[in-house]
Length: 512
Ligand code: NOJ
Ligand code: CA
Image (cartoon, rainbow, N blue to C red; front, side, top):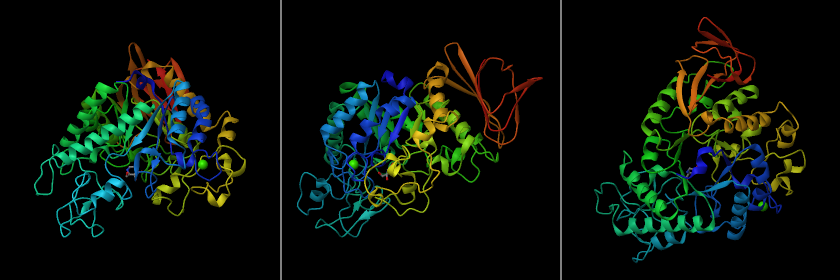
């Protein structure tokens, strides 16, 4: 595994909304390049950038029409290379977003695949052999081709599923993973990866990584597929880093991914933390962290040493962290996010508590996700410093709240969330026990109870983390005196007769 992953702290950039340098209202490569020092100063040393390839943008670029060509609105392939150089010049790394499960219907492969005559792309997608039979799955494209058949889609109905085969083909049109069509898709996937790794990217975030092989309920075929990719990378690009959108680390890491995300879907109970009716990290103090911990522990044991479980602050698909929690709640939430094992991922703007913008009309297939994709708020100048374009041409409208947080405002305020996040990152990086590879042992994570306590360790360093997001003081049986305080927020702990009590809205780190 690439050594740099040991202390990688990622920043996710949604390129449309980060910084616009040519005043067309859409962020671009030049804008990201301009802001690399900002990301570095925050303490993030790695970037995941959402798809930036040619696309009709029916799903914000997750509908690729040419994998080898950047979308003109962001800049040329050369400008992307320049951006990647800028990242490397600062000792940072960058992952591109790879969408292997589907293309746009506008992709030339799909156009060819729709033709009645057999050609090179006939088997590039998953087709049934007659229009009246629909494949099992999220939906199909039917009646739009001369070819007689229905084409499986993978997400939206303009995203036809690429053909990696069926785990156990049952119908005549279902192809085996080792049939020529699926093999050709695999070869092309490797070529795409080769192309961008040669161009200078450091690896990929992989979209819907769990979904490639069809009829594969337990993921066995898909795991096998990714193992083949792992072997290819080990041989040709041993430093390449891979993080999956899978949400089941035991499977993803078995497939050779270095990292898997816990997400707002899947069995992880991630939503219990920040995104449910009674989030654990809220001052209401009515949440439950125990199910999350039970599942985490299970995954942690299964994947031990093989790779990392990554807990993002959010992403472009879910509501902003600051939709449900606010003020000091966010600080305690970040104390958690930045003290867990695995590489942390911060979604752009979460470090200043950017809000979910309510009530927006969908942009580029965003629907309710659009409110989490509004322009980055840099300062108090026109369009919050995002763009000089007319307000009505901005990619997504800005948060209209006059009190919206900005980078400029928070940099000037020593008590801001930005400062807290920046300090917490530096603190993490200064303690091997808290870094990505340090161990974790849960000390107190009871059903419907506060605080939440765990022990991180690496070598001979041991750091006890005590989090009490609730508004009330909380106690736990504690075998330590908590006398070696490393960092606290919201007051101090007291220890008496083997019981520690901490105030509400508190976090503390202690060497033990
Ligand atoms: C997951 C991506 O994160 C999301 O934005 C996209 O719409 C779907 N996959 C389909 O590619
Ligand atoms: Ca632009």
